[in-house]
Image (cartoon, rainbow, N blue to C red; front, side, top):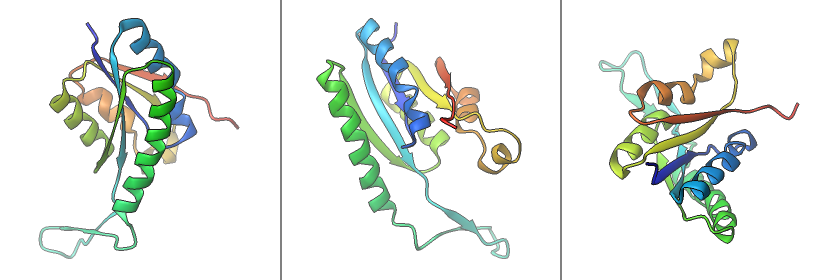
Amino acid sequence: MYKHILLTLDGSPLSEQALPHAEMLVTALGARLTLLSCVEPYVITLPTAPTHVPVYNIDTDLEALTEEREEYLDILREELAERGVNVSIVTRQGRPADEIQRFTDQEGVDMIVMSTHGRSGISRFIYGSVAERVLHGAKIPVLLVRVQSPE
C-alpha cells in the first residue's frame, strides 16, 4: 500500500522528531523514503507596483542556503542508509507547502510524514502553518507528528 514515503524537514531539531516515525514506517513496510527540505526565498512585495510584483531580497543567497540544506540532508541520509533504509534526498526552492504538494504529485508519493511545530496565537498568524496547508491540500495520507519544544 505504501511504497514511497516522504519526510519533510526544515533543518530544525523539532522537524527531526518525525524522523523515527518515518523510519519505523519504511522499515515495517519495506518502502523507500525521501527526505525533502525546502528553502524559501525571502519575498518583499511592493504595493505601489502595478501588479504587486514580488521583489526578492538581494541579501539572500538561495544557492548557498540550498547547498547547506543538502549537506544537512546528506548527513541524515548516510545515517539512515547505515541502518538499511532505502533513502534519497531532495531540496527545493519555494514555498514549502507548494513544493511538498508538487513533489508528491510528480513522484508518486503514497504518504507524507511531517512534524507540526505547535505554534499558536500571533506566531501562527505570522509564520502560518506549513503542516496545516499540506494537510488540507494533500490527496494522500499525512502523518502529523506533534512535537515538543525542549524548553
